[in-house]
Length: 310
Ligand SMILES: Nc1ncnc2c1ncn2[C@@H]1O[C@H](COP(=O)(O)OP(=O)(O)OP(=O)(O)O)[C@@H](O)[C@H]1O
Image (cartoon, rainbow, N blue to C red; front, side):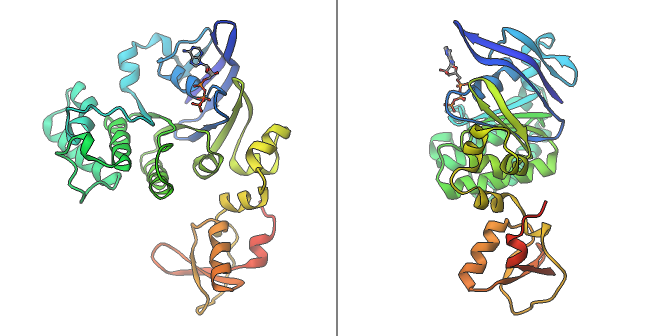
């Protein structure tokens, strides 16, 4: 658990983090979102003490981060950023192995962990292990950066706009990877982005920042349906709050019993927005809902998709 307790960070007279309190539960995927300059990166970097604070306290599992020697604090916290920062003269395998080596893991364990991460980030089959960073695409570099940050199985992972510079398809694939890794490892992830769609897609809870303060903290649906103020409504809902809501709800939550073998199929874990697109594409107001193995679970009707359910 990460607790930020009345944290303030000033530059000169300006408080860029302003008396901010927040509690992030162990195992949570928490997204900090807000406009440029709102203080998201600064806040993230106070957690691993890349930036010091002027007032308040930050505790991890009850322990003040200032009491922990900074090197061991950072070894326990993965950190992935947009510019990646891979070591240019080390191969991909050596880059990923950086922290396990520092920790003195035996060579066989390091090799096994590198292989595991390469598979987790879908870099296997791409023959990247012995390449140097300059010989990778941007998306591959980003994956290696995430793999390196995860290498020593940190309990906490801080991610600062890690996919900001990537094309939409690569970004989409990496967002899926992060969700899968989170589900698989239970790592606490604090993810910074200025992209509301990314926040709504990834966040179990979202903290919306402006001018060094949190305007609201809540689940994607809470922010969409019950914005604390007009600023939140404008940031979160944009011009199409209804469509945004469809993008955070899953087919699984509204399917009903039934057979519709001739209807187009949709995955139970697809969003309602994807389901609507499938209906429009096929001109069908009903879809067959299937699980990952292709087994029919029920049907989705357009009327259920449009109804406002919890
Ligand atoms: N070293 C510094 N000296 C003075 N001001 C700084 C310094 N670092 C950051 N700031 C200011 O602190 C504020 C918050 O910056 P921060 O990078 O945390 O914002 P952000 O929300 O992450 O923005 P972005 O999305 O553009 O990265 C900004 O106004 C920035 O100009």
